[in-house]
Image: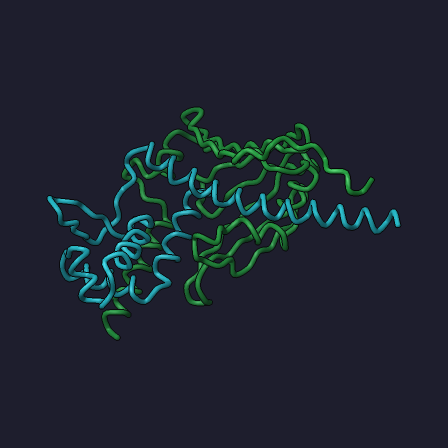
Length: 121
Length: 172
């Protein structure tokens, strides 16, 4: 399991935390739908709905398929059978995590400098 | 000479790499812009750890974070949204070498859990972090990646959660 499971669960919890996204899941539980149809149904812009679907897709809760100009969404985990895809999603998690770690370290470094200065005074 | 600017090389946009090094091992690397002593501190003090372990972009909270960072000490992280939707991850620290090395187990997944080793290597004020997840078998790593039929229990729990949530949304 380890971090990947953590990452996947994190992503899923995040995906499910939003009422619109839960609504989309419920809707897709009844029938597959295009992003356009979902946007209309939930009274939002296409861009807004694309974002929501993106979050659900990243969490593996929804999969999408583009046929012609229409992107159809359906319920169900997209199995990350492709190891490359798995590695990339794991890398993204760690990249985001390390970015935040960098910030914390930066702050501690600044604090240490200020403290050091105080001691010398 | 307090105002002296330390001559730091232009901070390159650090890159994170992930590689499957062997049948049983996944390795993550990244250079952090700070000394190992500080990176180690950020990794071992719960109040600091909880600020970065769950990236903001994930939109999930760390409900609790208990870490007793010493050999034989345990950790327990609970993620979720509110008390009713939560999931715990836990394990034991088996090696703690200040500023250079941490090793812990990941026990929430039962026998298939990996042992994680993190090393901190300081080079010119920066720290190369190398994190290795070593799984007990190729099958365990394959399962974690999701490339086999074996579905870890936690995924089943997740699926149940999704079903429950969908049902409750449907019923409202």
